[in-house]
Length: 275
Image (tube, rainbow, N blue to C red; front, side, top):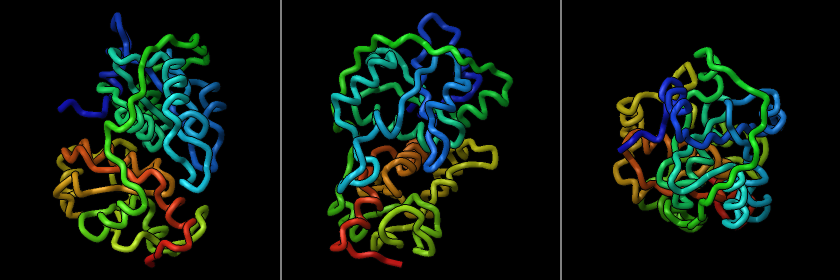
């Protein structure tokens, strides 16, 4: 299996070919500066910006803070960015791949077979001495057709079932899982039976993913044995995609995403909460 990650040197070489990959800038941070403003200050040459809140998710509501996007709206955004079925795609963000992983997962879910994430993101690119630009590319003419369902998802009922009979991983910070703090969602705690697996533990000190063997050891310690009986959630379905990316790097492809995640679960008073 080709790794879903791509390093800076490999990407730099690929961008020099006759048919380079489509570059997607997915900079986003919860409560941070708008990604479009950061993109305008400098981005990888040729990269198109996609707004996670407006294009890679539907509006917040009963289904959570980042519901899966309407397929037609997603397709329009991807085509404008030049995404085609027969051309590789590389997504990146400011560094730890939390937002870029959402784009990776969505494209795979939508049926694209060649999507990778820049390991270390823009921080790794600039640290290696590669340039940025403020030039904005013209709208692309991609032809990608979104066909949802190529990656598995679960709803609240399915997440609760896997917490009882399979494995449900909570990708949020440990203090949120334990219920010590809850900065944004209605209630603190976690889905009963879920295991704490913070996404930060997928990364080394340099902000890059741990090697596959180290990730495999991490998930073995979390008792990941059958991806088909494993699902991941977070606050709103963004960092959970980062966990699914790490699982794929470790050789556990096929685990499910709970898109509504804690933002949906905690908003329903009928759902139990564990501390």
